Amino acid sequence: MTEPTDPMAPMPSTEVQKSTEDSAPQPSSPQGGTPLKSPPVLTINTPSAESLWAEIVVAVNYLTRLHLKLTDEPKPRIVRKSMGWFPLVGAGIGIFGACIDWIMTQIGLPGIITAAFAVIGMLWLTRALHEEEFASMANQYGKTFDQEKGIGWLKEERSVQYGTLAVILVIIMKIGAIASLSDNTVVLCALVTSSSWSRAMMVLMAAWLRPIPGDPVADYFQKPPALRMVMALVIGVLISYLAIDSYTAQVLAIGSGAGLIVALLGANHLRGYNGPLMGTLQELVEITILGVILALQ
Image (cartoon, rainbow, N blue to C red; front, side, top):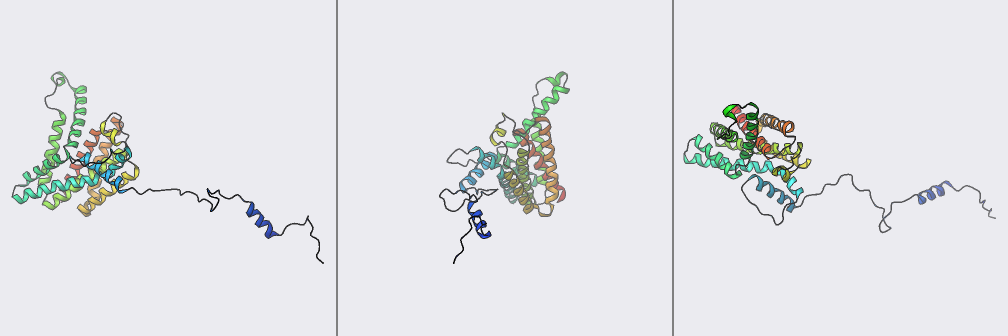
């Protein structure tokens, strides 16, 4: 005979465990099926080929006189990301100048002439963009100097601006440095490295300093994303290593020091970056790297 079950008796442990698991709340599902998974902590969206091309087009159109067309006006995020490609475009500008130097050398022209044509060719390709910005910065500080120190005739309007003198000096230094390099191969390596790394430093400064409102360049590019700033530095280092190999660390360190001085100038006096500051940084870093390679050859 089966004994009657006591209603007050405790349930077996296995049944209690099963009952507890059944009563535990389960993540809701939109269809009542498999519970939803937690979203990943970090998601990285792979950029499309169209957006990458748009970034490169913006960089090329700004840094050179080439005018590549886009179907639509680039969005602000595309413009900010385009700065990551500045070192690559800079390397192309250096290759263009080196090709002119090589062609003129094959014709039989002396080094000072071939170097002059190389510099003029790069000025033409870039629309002398950075030289103009450098001249604006030199004029700004030159006028400030005259207001503080000028007396008598020095307070009158100058017929020759400080910016003009500064650009002439930089161009002479570039021509002299290129003409003094040993051969066309060294010229190629020097121009590619200086043109690429000087533009990578522009991206670093734009990521560090705030854009000054009202400046066309600062309003257009704003602050590049951190990943694009890192990408610009990596591209610049790789290009420099491929060009000058064992001298990469020394050359980039000294060039970066010159760029840091300009960036600190902007941080202390301008409280941000603008077009003239970016042009000044590019010019000084470029001429510094050319000088260092000339000293190390």
